[in-house]
Length: 372
Image 1 (cartoon, rainbow, N blue to C red):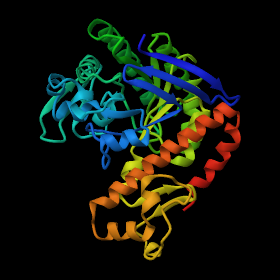
Image 2 (image 1 turned 60 degrees about the vertical axis):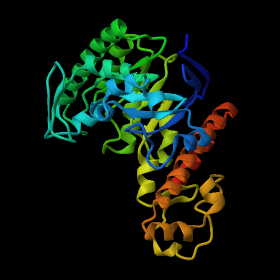
Image 3 (image 1 turned 90 degrees about the horizontal axis):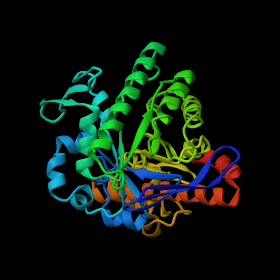
């Protein structure tokens, strides 16, 4: 079978070392997925992503459905061919993007009616349509449509959203089995439940019974304290099948990544390395640097003396600051390259520590990554 998850090692705390086989290559886990929302990781070419060692990236169903359209992409050979990316792709269902359109959407048990943020046109996204769009795109991993709610949410609101998410997962699984090929695409469910431990456990248990190839934990890292994120992640992860990959959606800061891995998470994604780079923020082994600050005007050091990326090997902080001050596009490109390299290097260090049995000590060192 093209899809296969190998669990290679487990730390006493619950952290896992694994390998996910897909039709477009192996994903070593724990893995970080750069976000390529509209089939492009902002600031980096596909060649650069390959050279950085990216094994899987994320694209978004909502944005590609609206522009240029999933049928057009299918007609051009699918998303891999369209964007010239030979490695694995995970597509989010678009649920988070739709639910962020608070004034432009209406949710029912059938699906979500919303207006496009591009032109105001009306659309109706159902669990079945989300399956069909992602099948047309041809991603390796497709996510079910789920209902995202604000955090913190009252118990009753979180319970209704979790129940709807579960029913949508059932519908998605049924439609996928009728219309898609599990040899070409794996479908992941998403566990919800807000910040309520009992709901998290109940929703995860019910989804596990549906026997998806993989599972995600959603609706977290949207404003609640980090400790709460970890607690809810652990509640869900403990109830999900250990032989299946687990994906925590939309995280996180470098200093927090080891904590998520300790919760038993195998995959994660976040816009932070690319978005922060465009705003002049570099993540380094000594903490964050805001390169636009005047203190770097004459600083001849690289962004991070402990970093082997192309930006750190060649350019000084003074030059990078100059590029930002001058409004040069190269500034965002170089910082994006560095930040993505930094995240991928963190994941390699975590995987090495799990092989060597030194995860706990490495996890403690991650605290320093939040220093200014």
